[in-house]
Length: 260
Image 1 (cartoon, one colour):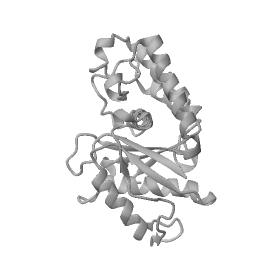
Image 2 (cartoon, rainbow, N blue to C red; image 1 turned 90 degrees about the horizontal axis):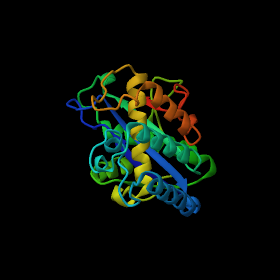
Image 3 (cartoon, rainbow, N blue to C red; image 1 turned 180 degrees about the vertical axis):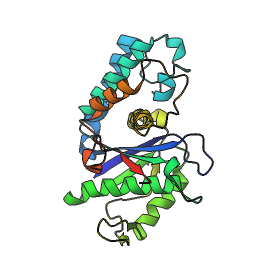
């Protein structure tokens, strides 16, 4: 069985929204590898404590860290060191025995006023995890941060009962209910989960990579100058070893964009 940890970047509002994109990142790993991966992450956090004085138990919230907001500002870490830490994190992730799927909803391509961002992004994500695992008859469960658990539970239940997928060869979609997912999505505080914090880091990178890729040009004014198009592509390259590149053929890093 696999465990899929979820986190997001951007807001899931539509038609009113504060961010043009909504990113949902899933980090999934086999349960038998959980302990080893956890220890690798914890040892990495201990190294960050020794090298940069970042407390082991503090939640690593990537956007706040990158923008030098509290509680990181008091640590007085330079822009260059913060970028180095992000690079080290990506190298760590790429060498862990887990896979990553990223779905991006580009709200600028949405044409219907009743478009449900969270419902669609979660559905597309679950479908791709199932596509990866069903060949080996593996099951998976979802663990996510607090806040959207009720809506996610409704979507997860619905697509196990009825689920339509667009056909590449026909104008009509076909039914394919989700078979691999077990249990409702379970809630866990991100402060208590290194894995959700990893998903948070990935969603932050995917969001900013996508801002450049899609030419949206709505970028945080507080972003340090050394975090730009070039460095976000470099971070994507460092993550590449764990990204599920088969999630789509339309992006070299396997990032899935909807609506088409």
